[in-house]
Length: 500
Ligand code: BG6
Image 1 (cartoon, rainbow, N blue to C red):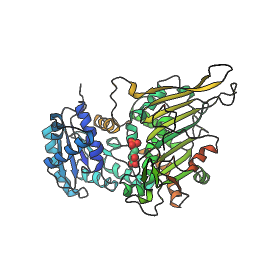
Image 2 (cartoon, helix red, strand yellow):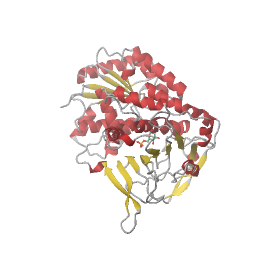
Image 3 (cartoon, protein in one colour):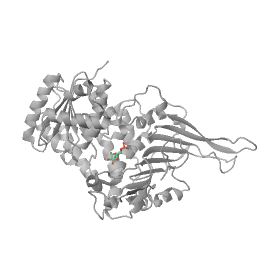
Image 4 (spheres, rainbow, N blue to C red):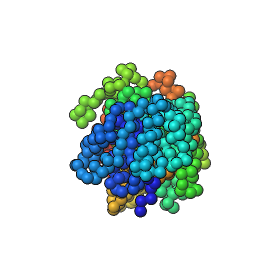
C-alpha cells in the first residue's frame, strides 16, 4: 500500500546534466514501479525560458535516449506531471513567482504544501537559494513539510563547509537538510551494515585482534569526461575521497548502532570520522600518494593525458589518483592500517573493500598457507567473496586457497534500486539515515584539510599511464609493509588480472 505523502519535487538546475541523467530517470523508475505517492508533481527550475510543453518534450526525449524507451502512455503520463518555472535563482524578488507556481501545483496535485527543494546547481548557489526561499516563507513547515536536498560538493574545504553549514542553518533546520552522498544510496554499501551486524560469524572477528589490514578501492576507467572545468578545481581528494570513500570507511568500521534509525546509525559513523588519526608531516610525506594520468594507448585507443583534457590547465597539478594509508584511533581499530585508493583512468571500474584477516599464530602447514580474505564488492558484479585455505588433495598436508562467493544477481526477484532512486525515495519518506549529517561532513573535512593544505605546497605528483593501476609508488605504500594491493578484476571471482 502506498503511504507516501503527496508532494512536489522542485529541482533547481533543471536543465543540467545531473537532472537529466540521474534525477528524472530515477523518478521515472520509481513511478513505473508504483513507489511514488498517488499524486506528485515535478517542477523544473532554471534560468532558461521553457514552457511546460517544451520542457516536457526535452525531458521525454532525454529519458527515451537514456533509458532506451519507446513512446508509451506510461511515459506520457509521467511527463504530464512535469512542469517548469524559469527563474533567476540569484534574485530573491523572482521567488514570488515561484511561490505562486508552487501554490498552484499544490492545489492541482493536492500536495498539502509538501515540497522537496533539490539543489542540483553550481555550489555557488547553495547559500543563495535557501535564503531566497526563506525570504518568501518557503522554508516554513506550517503548511506541509519542506526539505532541502543538497548535492555534493558540500564545501570546498573546512572553512567553506562551515560557512555553508551556517548559511543553511540560518534558514532551514538540520532535520530539513538532506546532504546527498550517492555512495550511501548504493545497496551494497548499505549491506555492509546488515552483513556485519546480522552475522555472529564475522562481527566477533571484526577488530584489531583478527584483522591485519583493510583495503578500500574505488577505481574508475573513465577520465574526467568533459567535467575538466569542475574537476581541475576539485581533484580526487575532494571529488571522491572526502565524501564517498570516507562514507564507505565509516560503514566498514563503525560500532553497532543501538537502534536501526537515522540518529543511531549516524552517531556511530561520525565517531569513526572523529577518530581518524590526523596525518602529521611524516604521514603526509610518506603515506600519501598523489598521481595524475598521462596519455597512453589502452586497448588500441590513444587516450589523452589529464592535462590535455578540455577545461584542464596545461600545467595542472590536480591529482586524479589518491592512495593513502590511514589509521583509526579507537579500541576496535588501534594499529590496523587502512589502505585507501581512488583514481580515474585505471584499468576498470570497480569499488571494493578487502578485509585481510591475520594468519594463524603458527604456520603448521608451511609459510605459503593462504591468508583469509573477505572481498566485499560494491560495484560492479556486486557480491561477497571469502577466500580461505583447504587441504590440497593428495599426499602431505598442503594448504591451497579456495573461494566461496555470493552474488547479488543470484537473488531471485530482488528489486535493487539505483542510488538516486533509493535516496529520493528516502527523502520523500523523510528518512535521513542515508544522508550525511552536518557533524559527519565537518569531521571528514577535519581529516582532509591537512591534506589539502599540504597539496597547496606542490608535493610530489606522480604520473601514471592511462589504463594502469596508478603510480608504482602507491604499490610501495603496501610493499614496504610487506603487503600488496589485491588486483580487482572486473568480475568478482575472476582470478586473472584485468586486461590492461
Ligand atoms: C561522483 C564524482 O560523485 O562520483 C565523479 O563527482 C565520479 O567524478 C562518480 O565519477 C563515481 O560514482 P559511481 O557511482 O560511478 O562510482
